[in-house]
Image (cartoon, rainbow, N blue to C red; front, side, top):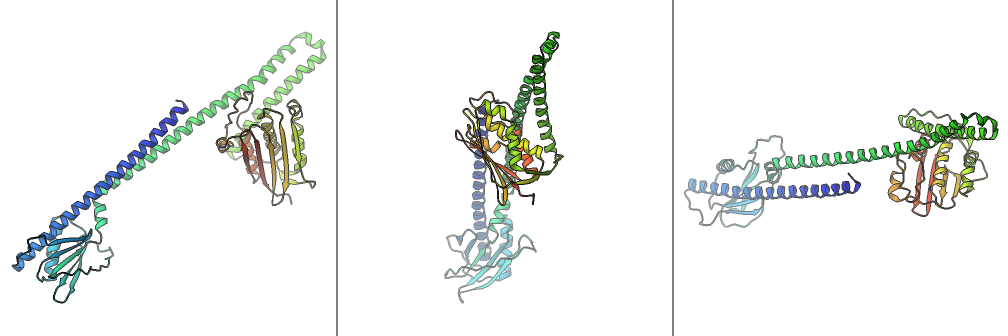
Amino acid sequence: MTNKSIRLLMLVAFIGTIGIIVTQTYWVRKAYQLQERDFELNANSALSNVASNIAELKHIQLPIYSPVEQVAPDYFIVQINVHVEQDVLAHFLQASFTKHNITTNFWYGLYDCMSDTVQYAGFINIQGNQDKTIPPVHFKKIKKLNYHFVVYFPFRKHFLSQQLSVWIVSTIVLIFILILLTYLLFLILKQKRLSEVQKDFVNNMTHEFKTPLASIQLSADVLRNPLILQNEQRLLNYATIISTEATQLTHQVERVLQMAHAEKGDLQLSKDHFTWQTLIKETVASFEQAIELKNAQIIFDFPEQPITFLGDQLHLKNCIRNLIDNALKYNTGNPQIRISLKASTQIEISFEDNGIGISKNDQKLLFQKFYRVNTGNIHNVKGFGLGLSYTRLIVKAHGGNIYCESDLGKGTKFVIYLPINDL
């Protein structure tokens, strides 16, 4: 599957996920609204039934209009036009609410029109929850000419939410499944990218090994010719080729092995004292032929006072070699590399070039193992994608860090920060 197809699949999956969540939210909201409507209808019916029971008990006539008035979602007023005892009212309310499946705790109170006050009030724990805190109630002052009682449901929202427990649980399960699927998709894409990176690594490694091996094989075939002994210069040249290519192979193998050891955490650092100015110049000197071949210019910006350090010279020299090698390789013109060194609260070593630059997206992945930046029209750049990853591991092993600053077409700057440890 191509990257374009994967991006399209991810877009469709993202839109589908958002659609499912929005749809589920819409239906949960609809279900809650239906529960609210059922609650209001049941409450009105139950309270009307209570008013009828009181009228029948007191032998009075109820008004022709509905005696129940809902003044708030959780607050009801019922006209009864007669005084009723508290225990009688409590009994009728509890029985009627249970019959109409309203099983939530509530406050009730009777308004006495003679004294213009709430004559009594009570709280009925219809659910039997002894540990639940009883919320306070403030009965609304509503002027009525006759006796009426009020009912207040403080746990109305909680009661409605309990009725939607199946919906809520199913929504949580659905969201969990969507998150799990998203995570699995992320893992699949990560594995696919890792597979592609490893494939590129194998291809690059094969190419890197094939070229020196071919040179060694060719030189060995020439050396098997008895006539070569008569020409000492040719014998020396081919022997030099074998030695150079074998050294190159050894360096490549050591780089891979060092990376593996560093990742396992068993990297052994051999620390000794050295001067950064000397170490950097020695490393640059090993690029003499490459610098001449590419007509490169190396600019040193060093302080006069020597900056010493306690660390592994071999590994740190490899780090410097990787950064200089990249600056020379990723350049279409005459490379110019400025190496700056300074020390204040920490040691700062920067490598700034005028190469092709690195995009912002590539900078995020630059220090990952096997990752190689797309070099555009530079098709002869070799490597395993291990240099920068190895460099960061070595720098971190010395208690420091490395950062990259770059713009496409304007060059790249790598900065290494290390602690001052040679006091």
